[in-house]
Image (spheres, rainbow over the protein chains, first blue to last red):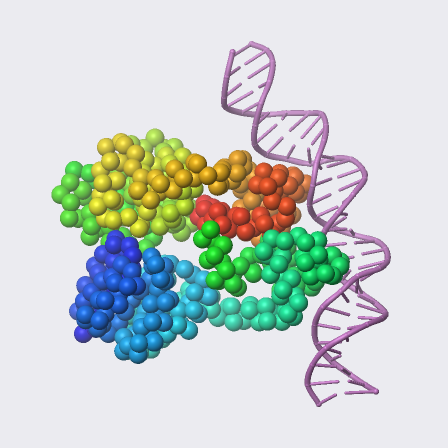
Length: 216
Length: 216
DNA sequence: GCATACGCCGGGCAATTTGCCCGTATTCGC
DNA sequence: GCGAATACGGGCAAATTGCCCGGCGTATGC
């Protein structure tokens, strides 16, 4: 019998999990929480074998919850169940110590499979995420970013921050032409054809900054 | 007795609705659908009094579903139940003909209240969305975005999605020059000087999410 | 029914920017 | 000292942009 702690801020979604898991004889939802703090409390009251958590929670994120639980040397296996198909999220979750990552687009069977895999101590990724991560590994992805020199990275940052070529040149005390050339080299190294793609790539790679941007 | 058609692509979430709605004596879920096409079919088989739908569906979006149902002079009231707190989504949904918009962060009671309000033919917004829309009205926030015409918005979406001017022209069957002009007008209306700022603005306003759903 | 406005479409043209080449200067490891 | 890598920037043709224009079709208002 696998004891499960459910963490998700949407009550309706929790109801969905419960309805799904309740049908399985070997699974039992022993507690629920709507945020990370409540999750800690519930876990201390009654440790679970498996914690299923969303990433986006009010207050501190699900990733922090994962890291905290791991840090506390907790025995529970952790499965992240998120709506984000972005492989970077999955990577972050796994690095933080989760064993599995399943998107909400997955079929219920896929979730159940992941639940059992993870409680057995094995990794589990939903098919879409596994594929996305694999492709990311292939595509020169973040390695391309690493191919940028320090200067190029600096200029990329300033560009994406919205500064004009002239402003950057003035700021760095170099010729606008140099900035322009650098801009061109960056785009070539990263394999993008337009500033728009460049911006999206840069934002995507700096997930933290992305949240800052998106937040306000 | 209110007959309800549930539309959401996440089986687990549907299970949640069902569990919640089943407890109410005056509500009855008579059918479910995982995408817009299935929703049409189910509706034709058995018309419902109320359609509850998510916005992000595979294939054509929930917004299109709403618009289509309205266009068909269907009697059903429509309630959109989405995870997006972005007031622009709510605005689009209401413009498309939905009577209510409730976020998934809402308490179940709030959803139930909205269900009853909407089936009575009245509008219903969850508190967070109503507040967000009100604030948006005040701050000039995305009012600039609203000043874009439909065509401009479409082109903005395609641009930010990473398509080239030529590709967009081919896609829309118009001259590259028109796309270029439109691009220029968009930047002027939004008050940005570069594609980079444009992209960041669009991402911040979740333009992509907004119509990623709608189209492509 | 008419006038006005507005959105869509695209031509035109100058000015700017880009794409891509090149050479030089400086640093760093060996 | 030497090779390699990097920072810097000139040059030039080609492409793009910025900004104007007018022609249509269709709402909107009187």
